[in-house]
Length: 104
Figure 1 (cartoon, rainbow, N blue to C red):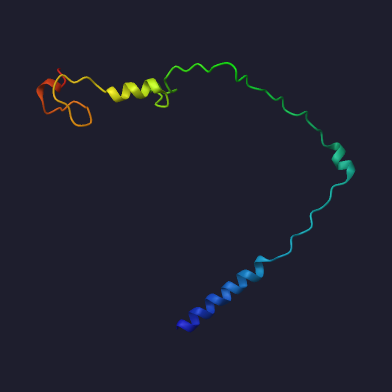
Figure 2 (figure 1 turned 30 degrees about the vertical axis):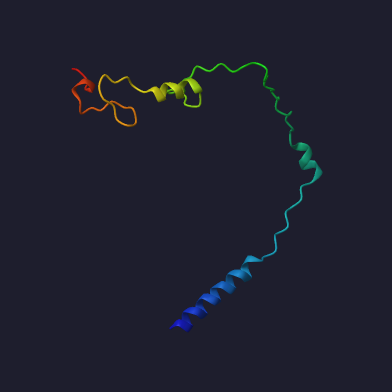
């Protein structure tokens, strides 16, 4: 059974290799008259950006969340919320205590 399986795999492998090396077909050439009938369009206008003007950033992304690539937003995120009571190791308020729970 193993010999039959090996022989089948080899046959399929050699068949794949034999068909992979086919010669490319010749492309039809176009006549000069056909090339003249094609209208050429002018090249697109190139717009150069002025790099001397500083880009004004608002610090917010399009969806309204702070852009964390800016230093000021990273500093705000590190300070975190101000807790009235004890905090966890990561600086967030520990909600097991009454002083840190929301009122209402």
